[in-house]
Image: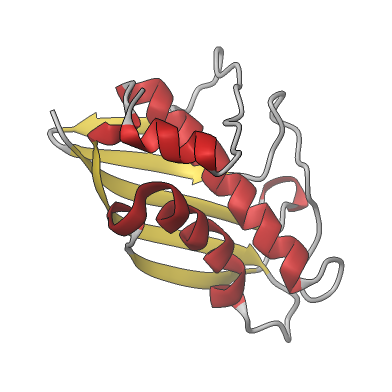
Length: 155
């Protein structure tokens, strides 16, 4: 088992498994040593939202933090599906997190920390990344958060 796989096991994390067949948009594209990951949502294995609502109105920032963490779990599962061994992740380059925000909510960085903290727990320094956390007026199916990333991979 890989070092990253052992860390995931030690953290008690179970990666979600999703059937991605029949989708027009792919979850990731690899160009050279860069993996461009599409927006990942806080969804279950069937692709249904686990969390819904505007942050600061329908759900609180701590619940949205957990939603961002679920986006991260889904993203790690996608990375594993695409490259096989998670030890091939060299480092996370850039992350963009969008938060479905009530008009007076301004703690988007706190919410996206749910994703960022998970990446550091799982990948250590390789999970640290440059990041933008922004508010959005609306997101798909009223999910509270979505995250996309660029990851450098090893051959």
